[in-house]
Length: 72
Image 1 (cartoon, rainbow, N blue to C red):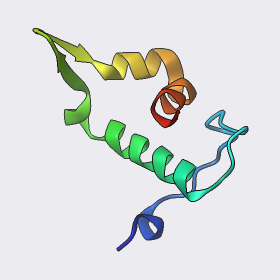
Image 2: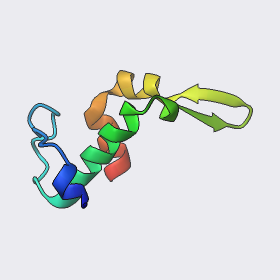
Image 3: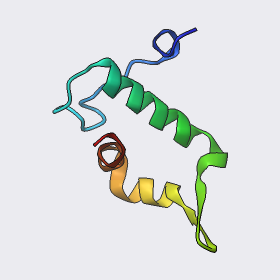
């Protein structure tokens, strides 16, 4: 089963990504980010000796900024 057959439809306007073309790369990136944040065990990462909660970063900056920092 491919990503295309199981990927939901995403509204780029609702995600504040209206300046992006609706293509496979953009939609797959959105889908992977959504899946990543839907899994609670993905919320922390280790940086030196401290654990950081990337959910806090994600919630503060919003989906668009997070998407652009990953996508660009």
